[in-house]
Amino acid sequence: MNFVIQLGLFLQTAVQMGTHILLATSGGIMCEKAGNTNLGIEGMMLMGASVGYWAGYTFCSPVIAVLAAGLAGAAGALIYAVITVTLRGNQVVTGLVLTIFGTGVAGFLSKTISSHFLPEKIQTAFAARSIPGLSRIPVVGPALFSQSIYVYISIIIAVVLYLYMRFTRRGLNLRSVGENPAAADASGINVTLYKYVHIILGGFLAGMGGAYLSLVFVPRWQENITAGAGWIAVAFVIFSTWNPLQAIAASYAFGALKGLAFKIQNLVIAGRTIAISPQLLDMIPYLATVIVLVCMTMRKKKENQSPEALGNPYFREER
Image 1 (cartoon, rainbow, N blue to C red):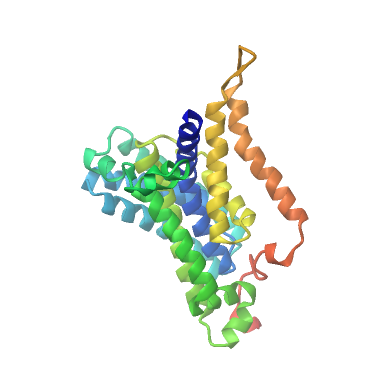
Image 2 (cartoon, rainbow, N blue to C red):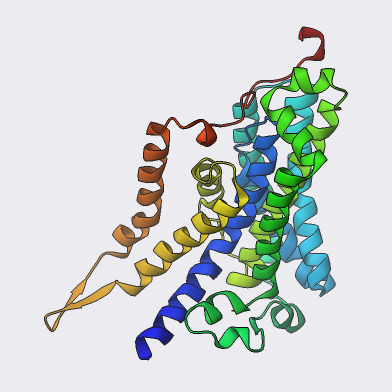
């Protein structure tokens, strides 16, 4: 019985540690399904984390804090969209510059927000809440039904995004824009509009992912609070094969590996305690991500391939 309880608590921690990755990965999927490679997710997450924290202690409202964080990420995505869609700039370079820009914004705001603490109202609003009945299910109950409302929202967003892309007309149009923008344009789809809308919405989700760290998971401001989570999200867009449902599993698996690193810092084998370097354990989730990506690259299945026009700027007069 004790093992079941411990397993449930471990999975609960895994979900908590993977939520920000899930939101950022969902945003990355939206952007890449529109045909744009955005390496600026880390920067948008940092902007969302810092602006969301600032809005949280300034306005003492959880809703305003989350909206401010999402809008900060959307603002970064808008800059990226103008350069890559309208001006047809290099998407890789623009994404890298966006990350540097977001880091600078967070560094600038940190001079103000590092000395402030979140109001009790916000911490209470994002505290874990158990769903009556469901939270008592062994193992699964604590993991999925005893979480912050932020976790529930992230799961709903991923599921809705999957249904949107798979079963709606606009979702089909989005996939058409990512696969063949010239053909989509010829069929009457406003390619530029679809790119702008989905890139900006993707930035909004990335900003929300960053705010989860500063508002819910920590919850206080820390320098470099994302710790490279944006880059992991970029990798998980590929790992999940641009499928939001698979992104849920990938994100929580990453969270489980992060949690495992804490659990095995002091292993007890045959009555002897063996201390393992925390730095070595911190490598485990990232090393696993690299290994999985290599394996994914070696698999040439068509359904696992990226959108055909990903990374290629579209110029209407060239079609």
